[in-house]
Length: 152
Image (cartoon, rainbow, N blue to C red):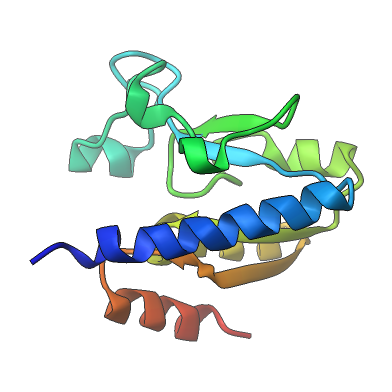
């Protein structure tokens, strides 16, 4: 049977596309993050990624934004080297420079990168909205458990 991830991702991508369009129509910032080491051998990635053997070398295809939701113009794309974009990038600095106090988080994996970003953004003083139908993970159970855990 096909893994849940591949079944859930297309619907999430469609939701992400709709959100992008709504933000762009209102001249609101659309920012991206990708998992991508800053080095080819991944020596800069988090300990978690090192232990799990997870490395997306700089410039590799796996580190690109999906074509269906690709950045337009000068939209910001930040490569990250840990689960949370707020820990392994300068995103908080960028958001503050842009005057952004509220963030809308989407993507995958719901129970890993997205959940980590939600928690860290809240701890850093940002108001957070997680659009759950624009998120996906490895199973429906994991997605639902993450959404329940992060609710608040």
